[in-house]
Length: 314
Image: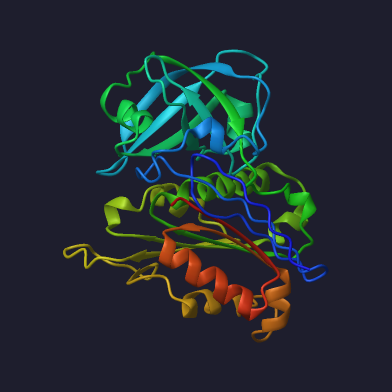
């Protein structure tokens, strides 16, 4: 029996899906984006009314900001309260109430929950668009300004102790679809780095990340700095990007199903590929443009991948 639940929010217009072989259940969370200027006619609070969100709002200050690509501005929002008065799950977003802006913004958190607990900071990466919150971030935001935030969202990474080890996690991102996945990757990194639980090191995590140019591969330096046997990033440039020096981790063209299959068929702990085992142990998190997301999620389902979670922003 197929069960379909349609919800909406401000970050992405699309779906979060988990397919279970036990009951063939599909849970679909439709979402809406302001980050690329899509679907601007719907009010964020209205379309996210059925989404999970915290009951309380919290005041935070803009403490740092910088352009991390020609189109994306990085913000650090900080609370001085200790203990930190709120928390979030890796992959969730915030409502952002901005002084003088009637429209409530919605932006995915790109940093990890552990980083918030340690520092009192959350990080955002906001793409320039015509939406009022995005325009404010890119044209009027200043260090020292206070905004009010509330955590919400149903697309998130579960705690690592809920995974059966060994487990393969595949993240697939296109453009600013990397934002919620960045939070998930950093949370895995922080937990493995600081944990004494050796089983967590049996995670096998791969990132397939596409952007038009190398300048739009935001967070690449952070991903490359992980340098751990459990993590492998692979980047794709969809334009020619002439003059850019490529490497073994950079490919040209869009992410194809063959690239996904190559990851799913890997089995570093056996003498050769074991496709059925890999599919059963793999969890796929997908967030990107319409063509990429629609094509890959249908192909993954047809291949028999049991755990697919995806989010879209149109």
